[in-house]
Length: 366
Image: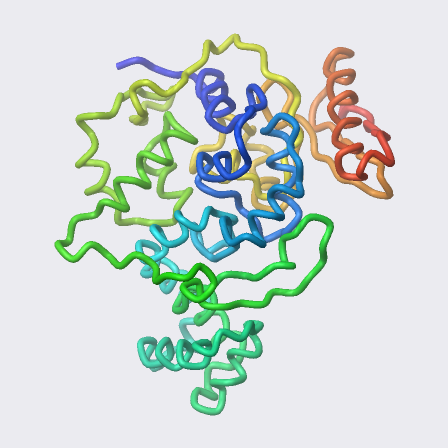
């Protein structure tokens, strides 16, 4: 079985994630291909798409949110994701059990003895009028009936697990600050979410495997689980195994992939790329060494924005008053510094609507 080293896997990841070469595809197609973008920080997906698409216009993504073609909702890993409306409807029921278990993992004591089906029915009844509500407003509407858990636990269970909801614009629009207001996903999109398959088969699980490998492969089943948070996909993987290619990484783990998916030469040049906080190019794997050193793994879950140099995390970045500031994590060559400065200047221009192209690169660590 062919062994793929971390450089080969890194180049494959960049290609699948549209980071090896900016893609000339519509925004909606990019969101679908990526399986959504993690979006608890509302402005971060704009930088993620700017780094991946040629001539990206942020107004196009805002238009898709307003037009209900993409939605913000709790999905993979119980985090807020920006996904296409079609994927939200198709995937939501498959995530129900995982979402409940993850909320219970945080609030098991507070929610002990609570009939979750009864709570869900009561929550749906409140939300049936179609009025947007914050999590706190919904929880307070039910707190008289369920006083023991407290509004935080009630709200988290309802909004992040029991009720399929969408976060409404203006939350998530370009250059807009707005609080979270929720409505039922079915109300916002005009149809009910797809129910689980009645015969016990798992077409959604198989679709998730294929979609994950298209955007993240080659990858181990542990990587797939880390991306979606779902533990129950072994049967879907087994059902697809005959149509998948198999490799091994340097640790001996089996990696699965779509046979015809791109796996570039490991020596393919990789351009500098600026990634937003919580980008799935990092969080979409259990083993992230293909793109980030273990010593810096914590950055990927701490919300740090990172810079890729030669396909690997080499710096963090922030922006203040129109200036993009880069903090190297390793020594930069003169060429690295020039490439980071050029891409950082373009990013500053994008984020400031062409008012600034300033970039500041700190000293390399000794």
